[in-house]
Image 1 (cartoon, helix red, strand yellow):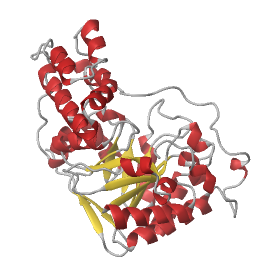
Image 2 (tube, helix red, strand yellow):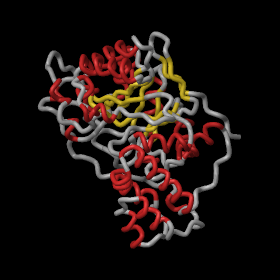
Image 3 (cartoon, helix red, strand yellow):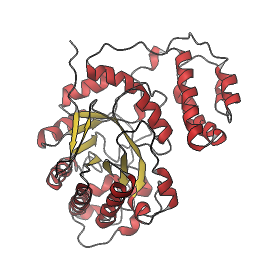
Length: 384
């Protein structure tokens, strides 16, 4: 018997709250989860859709590139933004600006990014190693957002590597700071996106804190999400690479969490219709030529496993107008069934584990930072 899942409630200390009826969160992915893609996913199902990661310094300095990213789709009833930063005062001020000037109703803080240009500056997934810096950022940001009744969540990883795990400490610090929920990508920074996610750590974190824990890692189908929640006791899931080329996954998740029977897999014609809709939304966002050019990177994901031939695949990867797109989509066999062999398989980047995570000099010598100023670490990070 399918049992409906409970809604996810994100509560600010003062009482403000965001209720996510279907406990699913779209993970920010640079260059992917722009307003067009978020709207497309939201049209398929329910959940919370988070804006691409932006830098807090970009917000505070009112960088035009950063502000251009703060666009929201018409169906985003809850404006949600993920912030990156390493300076507590700057992150807190960015949170205040987002709440006061952009109507943001939920802020997520990124402490999980494994990209070397972020970690070498003491940010992303290596920052929780410095417990005092983590506590300061969380405490000040929660206080700033709470003045507007806005809940703050955080996303992190298990730790830097197996010898430097931080997720249980991070959960305790987050709970004490008034964070509304913590999402755990069940990999280390050293793993990046390789290997298997270790779901048992999600269960360990959920058992150690009273705030909601969200699980992330290796959710490729709705059944994976149900299995993760059953095995770990987490309160919801975060979807990243699993939805690449498959925005209908959010419809599958909505059905699964509502206790409904799963819907049929889409045919090639239905996937083509989804691609066309994605193109329309991108064109509305940035114009036809830019929008269709941006769509190119999604083509391999959308048509992965379908027998459509190399010539059509190559042409789809070069579209720059609706005329180009429609001409190629018309060549597809609309009745071709979804390739069942693709179910449950990884999507997007995987890579290999890193022998050594890039950190600032001496970073691992102590778990406290003291008064050292790392405010410059926020510059030169993609996202504005």
